[in-house]
Length: 406
Image (cartoon, rainbow, N blue to C red; front, side, top):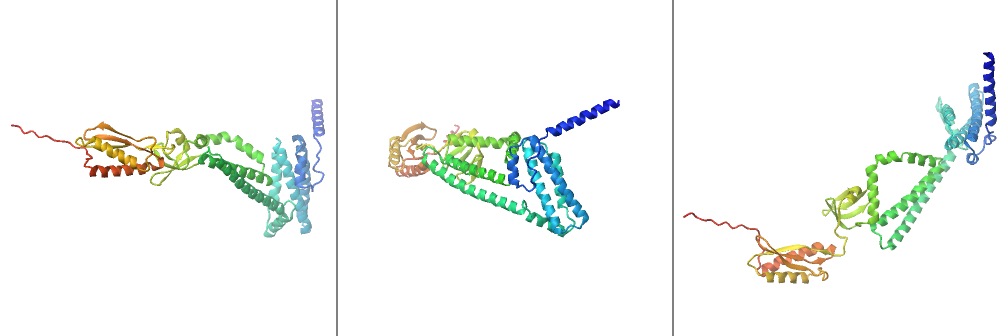
């Protein structure tokens, strides 16, 4: 029984020795004061196993320094300046161990245990029992190489990058706008869409670069967003549907800004189009937001989408009136109107023998923008000329014949 126990112990000892021999030696912990930027560059080519060795080596350095600080605080004989220096060294080791753990985790390592150890040490360092201790901790952070000044520099670089890319976004947006203006086949909707995409795309690139300067792991953030894309897509399926419909509206251009349209029971002029909704200004000047999904899925009537438009009117005269004279009056009024087009020719014909009137159709052509002006002017002149020429405009009536019984 004892021989088996001895054999097991030998096997465990041998495997641990072999494992220790297999572990690569640390290469970055030889200089505890190495700048963090240099440390991060040296960590870049290391493998997961090598980074684990680096993390253990930096942990040992931090553990030793934390022990020195703890003993000095317990003894209470260390001058405050010396104690502050020791704590600054401890803080520097914490920052460097944190960088190693970040690199290790980014390459697939599992630094949870060491990260918990580091978090516990940071929490112990922040615990103070009086205002003077808090002031001393803050002063050490301000004076430390990797303290306040480093973060102020990073924040300054962050602000500069954001400002520069904001200017670049505006400049390239204007360039895209001028380029789209020279392209005569594009609509205002497509022009606005392209310019907006250029501006926001360049600004987004600037934000990503700026976040990277603050130490944010942009790759991990993008991976997290990509991993949650399915959940986000499911939760925002209606919004994504409106987005897709908005892209189709931009590509096929069934209408443009300023066009008069009828869409799904809503009529008015197109005020603006985004990737989510279309804004229509109704005839009584109300702004109506219609989701793009409904716009693209409904029948779209573009009232001003053509160069000419026919004005349809019907005029009735009495059965006792002169039909030839009425037609001559209608032809004169239409031909004399300055907004009526000569081509296509207007159509004026006797159309219907109705219950109470003989109806003429009057169909002149005009520009879409002049539709209502022609409609109202012709209607007004027809009424005046019919009255002047003695032609009646009948209204529905019913004759009642009374028979008396003999």
